[in-house]
Amino acid sequence: MGIKMKELQVDMSRRIYVQELEQDSRRRAREARLAAAGADEADQANDSDKQHPQDELMEIIDQAKAAIGKLWETALVPFHAAVSKPAQKAYLGTFLFATTSLFLLGLSTIAYALFYFNYVPQVSVERTIHLQFGEGHPHGAATLDSSLTSLQAYDVSLLLHLPRTPNNQAAGNFMLDLSLFSPARAPSTTEKLLPESTLKQRLAHSRRPAILTYASPIIDTASTLTGLPWYVLGWKTESEVVEVSMFEGVGFPKGWTNVPQDVKLVVEADEKMQFYEVGVRIFAKFGGLRWIMYHHRILSYVVFTSMFWSSSMISALLAWLVLSSYLTSDSTAMKKEETTSLKIKTEQSESEKYEPSLLGGLSDTSRTFPAIGRHVALRFNGRDEDAGRGFDEGVKKEDEVIQSTGLQPLTPEADDEDEEIETSGFRDSGIGTSLDESQRARVQRRKKGSLLGGLPENQ
Image (cartoon, rainbow, N blue to C red):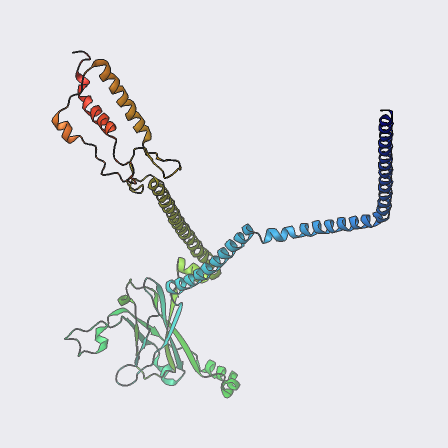
């Protein structure tokens, strides 16, 4: 026993020593690890101290980049605002407005020019009359075309270029007969052989005297000697132009048949006269708006063009408003139709979920179908299971009433024949499709028992 105790003591002391050695080794390993960790931290601190200037430099560079980026963004703010969608819409609207304004301004200018040339007639019309000599007095005619207009006053005068021959000076006073004729009318059957001059109507007629300017022989001789060099060079001739006013303020009624188209002149003199040239001059005497438009052309252009341009701009604006409202109403109607059709489709799709035809004509009655083997039995919940439960409760109440009163329900033959439960409309899987006999009897009993509603409980 003593030996065993000593062995146990030695063994225990050995274990204690080994444990102390292990604890000491673990403590030293822990201290070594702590020392290594401290050295690593010191190295990292030294490295961080070495890298600190580089980090500061990088930080400064990053700050400079950020400042430059902010400055660039600030500089680009006006550009972004200039190319934004609202600005593009404003540019487009301004361009369309300016283009439309210039186009309508051009149209207004053309409209005013057309109005001016149609409303303001030609101010002066001159025609040459070629005189015919032969039998009778010298006479001639000229065509005016459509140079004159109605409802306008005119002054008409004749220009006679006469040489100072002895015959012309001896003629003294001579008569000028001027007539204005309308356009020729369409001849009738009997008038086709008549000359065209007979188909014209004389609108105005005037007779005026004329005479060459008198000069005594001494004055005539002196004037000739003074202008002798000019006569020799051909810069002056011994002739005179006589202007004779034939009409003052003559006007014509409205209508193209009342406007003169031809003039006819007859020279009546006792002596045979000589003529260089004979012409007629017609000068329009404007009044009112025509006078303003002719004598103040720039002011009239500005006023009337502005009126035309304003009216055209207002018309274009109204047309644009009407067109935009029409297009907006069409788009709104289309969106409404799309929304309505989408809503109808959604309602149809929701109603199709509960459409009896889509359910295959299945029964409203809940059913349980047996399964093969150890599988769980299948159960079909009817579409109106609550109604089935209410039906079962009604049948139970009816049984209680029959048991408490002891009355049997009436069984008319008609009810036995007519009130059969139709199950042809149902389409089940074929398993358990027929009603249970007891349930059928309960159904028939409930229907027939409804005839007892008016009977007392005890008879």
